[in-house]
Length: 305
Image (tube, rainbow, N blue to C red):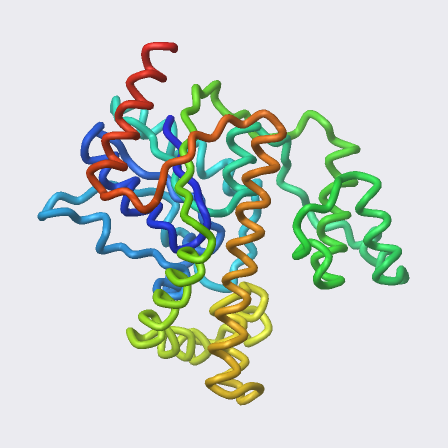
């Protein structure tokens, strides 16, 4: 399997589609928000990219849940395994593509996860704890790399619930197939990434992103649920709820996406320290040169394996 990762606005989908066309592949999305129907512009699905000169590149794990649904990493693992098995059964090359480091690492490093039921007794106990007490309890199980786990009491309590269930049921998890991985990352100079983020944000705002989120609210998705999806959904919802002005929304969102891109790179660097070999490709290269580089790396990879 080829995995293509990188920070937001780096052109992952475009490269993955070109690789799929050239090598006979199909794409599995590793994006925690693209699973939701109706969340298109804000999540950067770029579905038109999957069609090149009338040739449609198959993709998986996009538009598979309704917005507002609580989609878990465990469900992603299960959905990934189904998509992967379906692709290889048809002698196609799976290409995992996305920017959600947790999802990618859950596959590459075969995280042991389980479908964790709600524990009402434990939740009642945890509700009596302070926010800091909850953080310290979670830290007994895992090192906290992602601040979103501690952003709200609800997330903290759910994270503790999952960790304690897994500690009590160590053999319940999804079996990831034994996959030989070639992991590729797209990289740009930092100032260029920042500019690409701003340009893309302006383009999306001009092309209906606000209307998309307004429509989700009209469909009955609660504002607090959209805010929890973060980034575009958080700040545009706040704007639509008259909590911030348009200019505030743009500035806060632009900064938040930049910070998100930085956190993505931090996650990938940690993956490298933990043994994931990422081959970095210069994002400023032309599409053809990037494709040539991927094909060269893939040929070497196949020869070694």
